[in-house]
Amino acid sequence: MRNAQRPHRDQAHLVTEARPALSADIAYRQRRYLIMMGIRTVCFVVAIVMFVNHLGWLTAIPVVGALVIPYFAVIFANGGREPTTRRGFRPYEPNTPAVYQSHGGPDSGQRTDPPPSAQ
Image: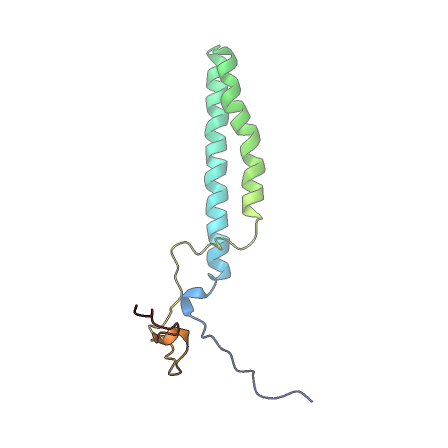
């Protein structure tokens, strides 16, 4: 039979550690995908204009962008729940005093070596 009580946790969980809502995550990924596909469309139009104006090898630059951007857009859109980084987040750490040791050990500040002999 299982214990009905939950195990005691040593650490409290903060609200700031919670992941964003799934709907917010989906909206973030959709927005990023649409922005990348908009940049791809601009690259495609620029490539056509450059090709029509006979700009030669310079036309290859936006063509490469128009071909490569969709791959990365799909990878980023399907990459899972993001952002997961905690840049700038510091967990709460209470300001507690150091543990006091009352015994006469080496950390207590008492001298353990004999004093130098006077001659």
